[in-house]
Amino acid sequence: MKQKPHNYAPVERSTSSGIPPITDQFGRTFNYLRIAVNEYCNLRCIYCMPEEGIPFRSKNKLLSTEEIFRLITIASQMGVSKIRFTGGEPLLRKDLSKLVKFANQIPLIQSVHLTTNGILLGKYIKDLEQAGLTGINISLDTLKAERFKMITRREGLDTVMDGIEKAIESDIPSVKINIVAMRDFNHDELVEFAALTQDNDMTVRFIELMPFDSHQIWKTGKFYRAKHIVADLKKQIGAMEQVNGSNTEHYVFRIKGYRGKVAVIPAYSRSLCSACNRIRITADGKLRNCLYGHEETNLRDAMRDGDSNESIEQMIRKSMRKKYKDGWEAQSQGKEHRESMTQIGG
Image: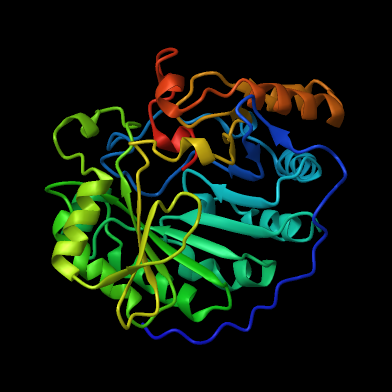
């Protein structure tokens, strides 16, 4: 994969709506909305859901195009400047490019991103590029075909790699590969993944396994702690300089002579909670103020019951004000009632 220079020129944007930002009792400000556009997925990753799938909600219980438009508009007026569309697999939703284009045209939105498993990326990359997508995160846990089939319970590694190559060749400025790092699954592929950054201005990110799978694989001893990933990277690769990355990229490095970056994200260790800036809305319209929390605020029903934008805004503010200090405290408050990450939004 050889990357061409990007021709992308960002649109001039307004930076403030004049409305106070979304904050919580610990002084955190929330300007990043992750919105799941569906629960469905064309893979069955072993750490996400059972092979037979899970009971998905019917389409009428998921947010409509217009409801997503409305939530993005409200959030942007409250200081949200970054949107990420997640799933399930968001590219299974036929109006995704329409959603990207809508968000991109709001002056207060600075960037619009997508998280995908890459299976359909090659098919839709041009549509996403034309809609103004500014970033793609591609979930890929192995570069070995047989291992890909074992982890995802499906064929498709070549298709994903083709999608990654098309993303790199596109004018979309940010391309990242997300690898859920697990012992005995893919811990032996650190160097191979890092090598993808040699010629490409992209970020390869190793992410701790999170406890959102119905079979609780994270309890089997395959958990690979962030600090151990970093130690193994340094041992196997050697010369890496520390560089800057996004808020969640706690450890970020560039290998000497390489164009791209390698990052490690302590998703389970939760050492980044004090800098959290995220709001999550599930595909069925429930606002979650923490990935590990249990309380949900039903924005979908409020909209369908005729609540005003001002009322929805207050619901969002109230929920985020109640956010716990960190994910450990949030998780301790009750039993998780969504059995899969695909029901939460990646």
